[in-house]
Image (cartoon, rainbow, N blue to C red; front, side, top):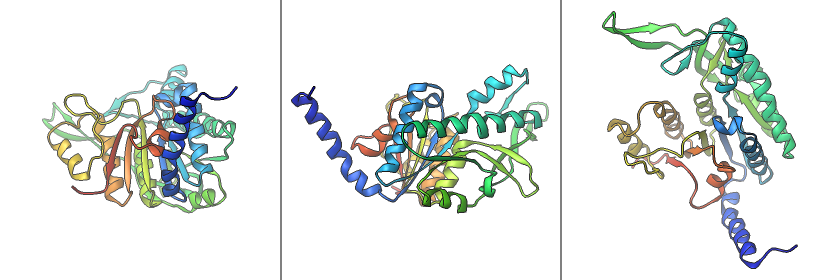
Length: 300
């Protein structure tokens, strides 16, 4: 069966629209944070894997960093391990850390690698502990205490932040034509293991790898203004203004902070995109309109 004329023209238009982007991004590193609904919906999971494989086949260097909060919560519940959150971060004692490492470094990481393999690509799964990829340090959290009438430092256990990224492991994987799939777990100089926010890890890796793009998949359509419209094509100065006037607030602040840090450190652009849309990564990279919110390194 052959295509009708209208369908053929639509496909041709899509392919020709993608060509200049393929030419521009060939040889460039693009860091993608994979999380949210796209990780737990089988259809979205497989479409993401195909997107990444296509990126690699046309000459780009995708680097995948993944989360796994829902999967961690599900296993903790099955094991009857109590968990709580402070300032949006999971309190992580040694028992919880064992589960985090099992889920992120084991089942979730290997499923992403398998999905990429099923889509015809080649991937290698690692954690930040492998080859000392991610040197971590303990994260300190300040929380307001009504009893004290002031802020206090709260110990949330084995939750960390990035101290240093060693790019040697990533360069070896990329030079071997594999796609790195990274679980956001790191260790400090004493060997203590830490769970690290995946957005933060993706941002830091984009910075040290001098990536062309940082893409953060979310469960929202993008950054919205006060009327609910998607904002895009934003400069760093515009984003700073939106934070100051309260347009960006709450749970979106840390994610936007990671995007800002990346572009202010030399990454050409950062994207907050809706991972609930099939092939969201390809739509953002290969089409003129894009999808979600684009933030560039220009200051005005």
